[in-house]
Amino acid sequence: MASTTRRKTALFPWIAALLALALSLGAGVFVAARTDLAAGLALRRGSAVFYAARGVGPSLSAMRSGEEVWGFVEWPERGFYGFFDGRRERDGEYYAGIRAPGGAARLILSPPRLFEGARLRIEGPRGLGGSFALERAASPSARVSTLAGRLDAEARPLSPLSRLFSPLSPADGAGDAGVSAFHVDLLDGAGAGRPSAIEAALAKLFRRGMGARAYALGLWKDFRAGRALPQGPKTWPGSLVERQYLIASLPSAGSAASERYVFDGGAHGNTVMLAASFDAESGLALESGDLFRSGAEAALGEKIRAEALRLLDPPGGSLVGAGFFEDKIAPSAEFFVCRSGVGFHYDRYALAPYSFGDYTFVVPWAELGGLLKDPARWATR
Image (spheres, helix red, strand yellow):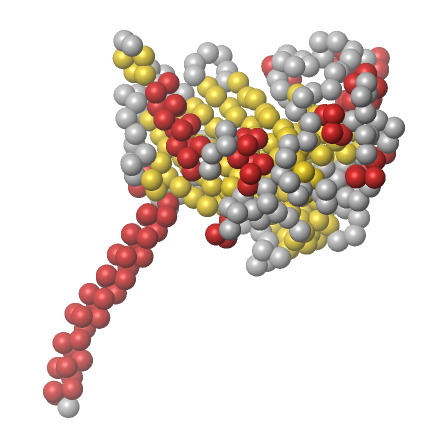
């Protein structure tokens, strides 16, 4: 009996050593998966999924990484749509503000059950409130690659190890004097170890033909170089935040957007959004001439103006009354397709002063029948 006890006791150090080794290897794999030590970046994989209400109701494209969520929401029957972004709070739900023209609105998204469904609550003006059960909808195979890093006032890359167990947020370091923050959320169509049909489109439209990681490393290198001056490193904090959206996936086409915010001193930073649509089969970009008839620009501009007036309801029925520079809108080169119609995005300063923000207007499909080059192509949504 004593001999057996001694043998068991002698095994304890070996068992402890094996457990320690397993934990060490596991931690090493975890660190390796979440960092690029050579570049000084932290890495996290995220998801890009589509949800749709059961029956008539809103649909949602949702990108997630860590505690953050962003995407595009639309409710065609109510003429409601907009880009959103937010984060998960202590109650486990995601709270997101919507950049909806004409009124503030908020989404509350309950985490999905095994990635099959979710629950969405909408709080907003004009009777938009409601709670909806969402089901996972068909979507392209895509994921999100989040890479983040920080630079101190001397432009040295900081080790990402201290951030491993914390959310990677664009706000990281924003309140630290002399700390510059770099953060990109990139759509990556090479999920699950196989290239997605949209990978070529994403790379060509938003990543200069590069893979997500190579593109991020190039941005990081340029960001670090930009923090240096001939007379020495910049002493004020700067930031580069790029976030990409998978807006919609229709039977014949898809659409996505890439939004970049850069601050390098001055009163405020600058934000630019690129929007694009691509053929569902070939991945080739769709130009305006692929959607609309020749000479449709003027009529299309009137449709966009009418949508802006519907949403903003300005005094006197003029966009000038809503603070716009003039009472007309030309079609934007940054357009996309979605369930609701064709959307047109306008950066700050394009239509109104910086303080008014950016604008996105979606002209319903029903209003575009006479302007579309191939109406049958967009009949199924």
